[in-house]
Amino acid sequence: MSTDRAALMATVLTLLRAIAPEVEPGTLTPERPLRQQVDLDSMDWLNFLLSLHERFGVSIPESDYAGLVCLNDVVNYLQARLK
Image (cartoon, rainbow, N blue to C red; front, side, top):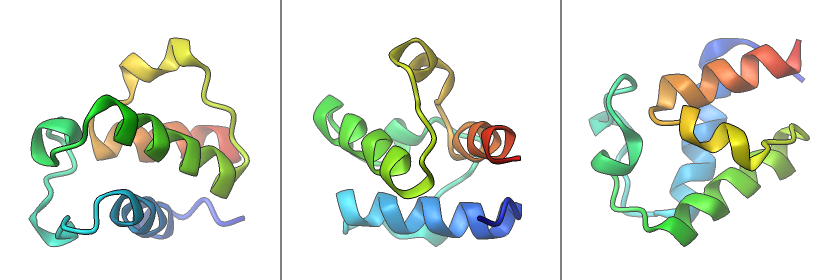
């Protein structure tokens, strides 16, 4: 699986749009808290994290959830675990 940052970001955004189809990826700022930019409730957020696990095969323990705030955090997290 590619760990190319752009490819990871594109896949993350595709998975996010599957949870929140109203999201326009071009309007998101990767450094800003994602849940503030996208109206995701806690169940949507959990489903998003589970979709990341299913797509990338990366386990995301609950203890790591607090560190996954913005898109950059998510991509950095995946990139570090896919090497």
